[in-house]
Image 1: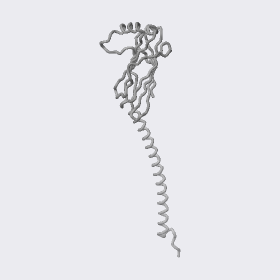
Image 2: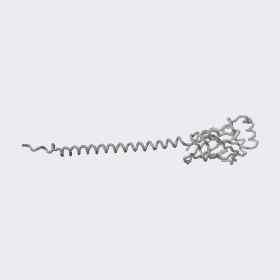
Image 3: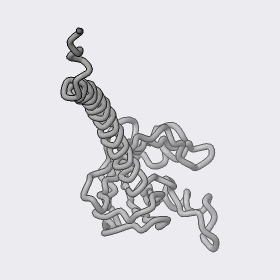
Length: 200
């Protein structure tokens, strides 16, 4: 008579089933661990992108909207009359206006500039102070006057006038931002040609 096979005993069969289940459980655990790690990395990347997107969308953006000798508003004397008045007094006015194009207020706004005639920096007298804050859509202007014997030459176009503008400001998260712009005076149109801007 044959002896019963060991594989037919219930304890051996149960041990084999438990071993197979343990191997399958280990494989499933490894797979779940790998999937979880990938999910965590994807979530981390999503959080980083969301944070960058939030900080980009929730910041002020200040840009120079006007650089000129005179404001463009009704009821003022003609530009020709003002040019003649400037020639007689050797005064060169300058108005720079900035606007907040961002979605949140800008604070600690300061506008500084260097006015150059024939490449030489000129002393200027500023008539307005810096703004404390600029709300979205709000503008701020800074005016100044330069006294120089070269005013007539600038207004005639025989001397060059350049303005290098720097606007510094902060957002509500205390980051420092800056806008730089360069403009060159065109005596034929009595306007400033904007030569390019840099935003940081």
